[in-house]
Length: 574
Image (tube, rainbow, N blue to C red; front, side, top):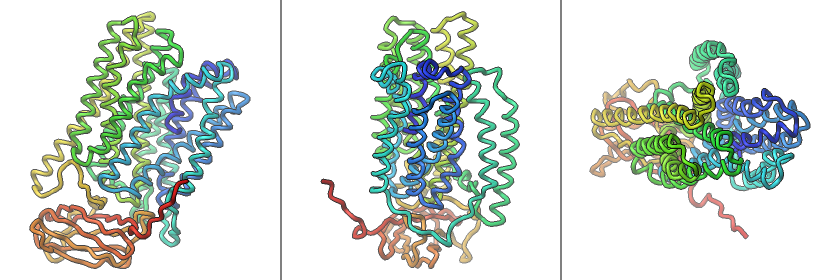
């Protein structure tokens, strides 16, 4: 629902204008305001979910999203609709990090890849079928009041999802005494930076020259202040809003950059193609939505497949997906340059190819980007990742829209050349994402050559979520390499006391053994560098086995243990 509402509203704008008498500026805020507040709250709400309970935050956010959807549908004037959309966007932004945080919490290894594969399929479908869904609703309910049903449709779905969330999601357990400070100043600085950056981008969709581009400078200044404040928070109480140590993890940093660039190209595809089909070729909203459906179908199928393959193929799968997207978009551009009569059928196959490639990018990139993030910080890390995606979407639509409209004006209505110019920028953005993916792949292989015994790029199927800490240059007092970290519960990230940890070498011999402390921390000191199996057992927890690479430096791992099988409750569905 939250991602569908980014694009479904576009086809209903003419109906809103007639029904409410909305101006062009007010219609712009209906679309742009949602994206703005959505991106504003992602990081801080992810942190709230990590610390205060993801189920609680999920249900509160979903209830707010459902209520604001109903209010938007009941709007009696443009001002009421704009306010409802701003609140709806904030509720959607609060909701999304909880979903990824729950996936991080409940799944590990190959199961996590499959879960993210389904999540990626939802992203691909909901983004691509927005125009089709809006067109169907308008056709069924009528042009005059049909726009209201674009919002009303969320109400029954939201109510069902609330009931299922209450029933299925794991209970949030009390974390009294362990709660981290919320870092309100950091949240305000980051929120101000996001607003100052995204506001001119979203306003430029209607008037590129008139957008307040000076706010970009304000965004840079607030961003610098945010970094300085977070470093101070790290020194004073040790719990900043964003752990910048995550950005020193190559998989997370490169995955975030790749996601930003890909979403800049990915979402701008539908923006320019919808304009071209409806205004340039006089397609109805339904016909335009149907023309874009092949992309959604290809993306949905390959996302589910990609989630299963990512644990075996790793980063090469993402690079292959990006290459496929580029091929599909270049073919789409060539077809549109030829200006065929049946343009909808002509672009079906190229869009299908691009969609298949896109499905091999979003979910696998999300899986690998968050693979080394501790479950305790899953919501916050997801918020940063998704904020990058939202900013990327705004940048892409702004850049592609500016080129598209300027070409249309200078060519005096030459739609084929205008859409081609827009697609060139889209392809360029996807190519930049491809270059980031190739760089990440090459850096990974160079790193493996330097450390021959480390894990391959495909990612370990082990449950531990690892990240190197700021102290990775330290060595153990015994002079050898050390493995340190904490054992935590998958439900809530709380420590598991008294765990038994064993390192097993390639020959099957015990290389080190340790008992975890009361706070879940542990320290293992093998005699030599190399690749080991880390076997972890604890009472009431399912045992786990993962791979760790010990390369002469102290390595830090968060080991996440799920509940033992006898603790699971199986409900019979009647």
